[in-house]
Image (cartoon, rainbow, N blue to C red; front, side):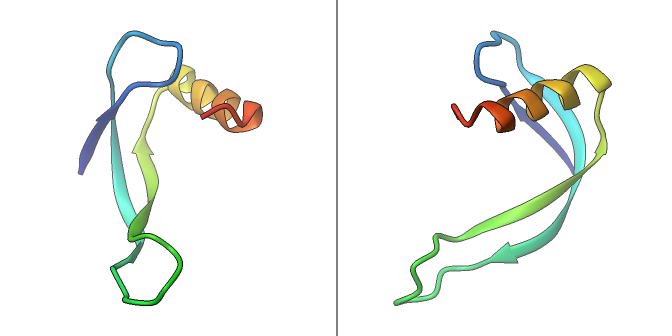
Length: 60
């Protein structure tokens, strides 16, 4: 599937291909929120670097 998002500090939308690799639904009494993990299937080197920088800075 294709997702779109904006990296912090950038004013433009980014689109990337990805696939869902895990998901967690709502479970009453479970502490974690529902969510999912994705794997990028098509991403530019510039966007990959932006994501890496965001994760390293821990300011997201």
